[in-house]
Image 1 (spheres, rainbow, N blue to C red):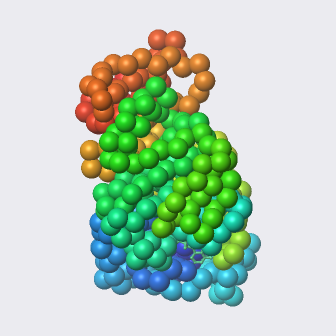
Image 2 (image 1 turned 60 degrees about the vertical axis):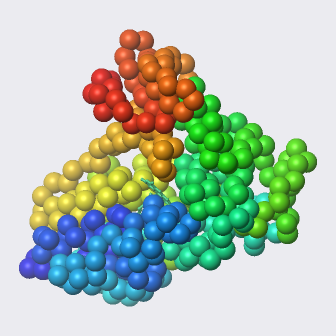
Length: 365
Ligand SMILES: Cc1cc2nc3c(=O)[nH]c(=O)nc-3n(C[C@H](O)[C@H](O)[C@H](O)COP(=O)(O)OP(=O)(O)OC[C@H]3O[C@@H](n4cnc5c(N)ncnc54)[C@H](O)[C@@H]3O)c2cc1C
């Protein structure tokens, strides 16, 4: 095939990575995007929302890079995607990459749900940016990694911040014995934490919690998880891929919706990029009649850092029955622990610093 035509559905981290890899190999790439402007680095949205990054400073690549690589960035939602026929919006391609990312999930709270902001797109970030003025009170529902980063950035922007988490732990429970250290650091930034109690109702003035307490706010952010998008606009669900990310002949998936069952739910830029690279490589191999490679799950750290508040975890930090041992502590804000299974080190939890993390990483089984 002289110059294969490839359509990519979704211009996020996976889609952009795949597009540049395919274009570099000589394919004619059309990148479908349902968001305006240039594809952007999604994690920077939190800084945009709280005025710490300019909206036009978060592009993954400058506009000229797409033209130079010969990639057509088409601002048109893929409303009809047929993976068997390899068509997008009625146009036939030699190959497809499906990388539509995720959308935020908001539980069916009672009350004034329309008051709740989500933070998943640039449009979401700009809406929050307009309302997030110093001195205002914000409630963040959800004490996961994204909710905590939003809380810290809101506090840095001069807002009064409360975090509500219905689970008995923050950050999805990955911090174990180190969580108390992180809580101290958050509280030292003026963030009020309410952990282990759910939301009963969103009211016009704030929230009522399940234990009857009320919280007043000016701004409400729901950071309560995400759901994968399906191939066509308005659809959702994980994609059923083969081990090499294939969906159909000459069609591959990448990014959040392509996560294998054992890794769900995971939203990760680096994983999306790696999947985008592999999807592109496998599509090119298939077009050339060569064998494809399987997706090999990478071991990546989970981390959050805003100013001097940070944590880093790696390896197995979730299995029950692991032995947690503190290897260093500098109260009140620094604590490092390792997790052992028998005499093997299988996980790391670092709060307040990253110093020494890389050395221990080498010892991980
Ligand atoms: C606020 C925030 C902070 C985050 N912070 C981190 C972090 O610090 N570290 C980290 O690893 N991960 C972070 N994540 C998660 C990370 O951004 C995602 O896992 C990553 O973007 C997934 O990449 P993707 O390519 O699968 O999807 P995305 O980057 O979401 O891109 C998918 C794109 O496809 C578009 N699309 C969907 N359907 C269609 C269609 N039918 N037609 C055309 N376009 C379509 C979407 O609108 C979107 O633009 C964060 C996410 C958010 C929202």
